[in-house]
Length: 231
Image 1: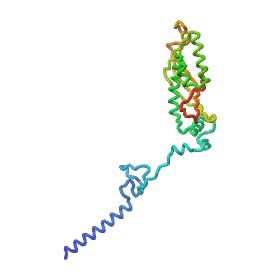
Image 2: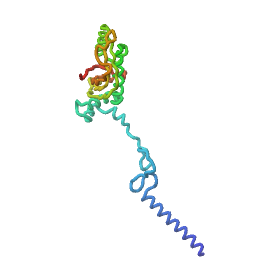
Image 3: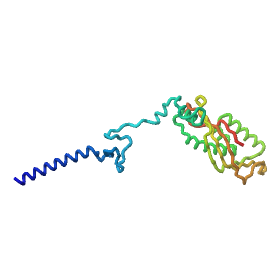
Image 4: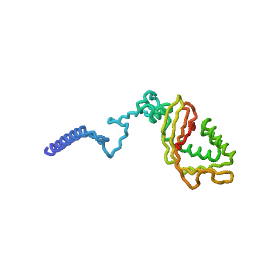
């Protein structure tokens, strides 16, 4: 009989212990990434969209929200007339617009235009410039050829390229970039003698180039529509 009572006591003790374990787990929390204090287990990564009850909540599509933002709301991001405000307006008109990507393309365009102008490659210039700017460049090339002059413009490096103006003109986006570059500029006569510049001197040149693009057009390329130098 003593052995029977001892066995029953063991069962009762086990049941009581199990009861306290369950109570403790309900108070302290399970090892599922959260504890009773609200702190997550630092050794268990939790997906940002996972809730405490294990359900998954879809995150909002931020790009979609940007795409459908009313144009009037853009004024809340920057003061009217500022560069930032202009960039926001362009982004509203063209959701795929990214300033960093634009500047990277502008740097490439600067080098291509400089090389094409120096070598007299009007075919390449026509694809990069609008009609007005192309006409000025083409005339300058024709004039120097008639005089027997050749130009050697070497781009040593682009020190900086910054957006200094941005605005929408109807459906056309306009962005002006300030380029600060180091160049070696030499003009030679028909005999190959230096007529202007110094082939051994690197000079700093500051240019302001304005690019434009119709945001409703399928063509994603920007065209150079205006240039002027700070000198």
